[in-house]
Length: 115
Length: 113
Image 1 (cartoon, rainbow over the protein chains, first blue to last red):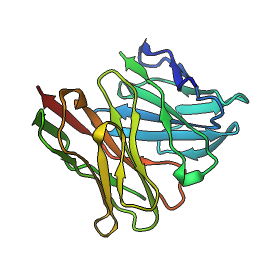
Image 2 (image 1 turned 120 degrees about the vertical axis):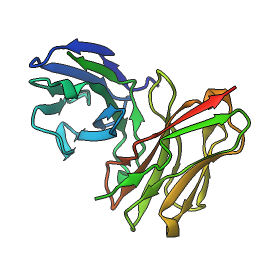
Image 3 (image 1 turned 90 degrees about the vertical axis):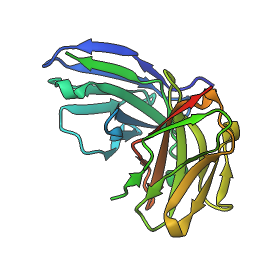
């Protein structure tokens, strides 16, 4: 079974631009979560989508948004990029049928650099 | 809100040394606990998890962790590390019925050959 895939793997943007990242979950997984990983902050939760609906949201500004499609694939958008948005963005998928005992499986991440 | 502390930010060991990485959480109710590993240039992988039952859980690659409820801890151990264990290790906790884990900030482990 294929793992979680993320595209693109690397992105370089300039301040003020916007960016869209894509995530394809493991087949059969219905929940997709997004995290921002930085050296100083570790993994910070952005949001989680389940059945095309945002079910949970972290403490990030409205410039960060996402969506999920009917095939469970998800996209994340960041508008008006700032230097501080440079990070590794991770996507994780889970079956989302057992709630707290679900295990998340992570993709390789998209490395975003904002210049 | 749940918080997860990994007190060791950087650990440097020689091969064959024993490893213990600390993880403490704040929530006092039912928890589900995870350790993930991120090898250089690779994605986060699940090492082991604890949901219920025997508090000593064994994971992949010889790792184990012990859940001590009274200490709010879930420390990761390995009796003899290898150079290939060089990686970043993350503890994660789900609590109170939450679907979303809270991650610690990670511990960077360097093993010298």
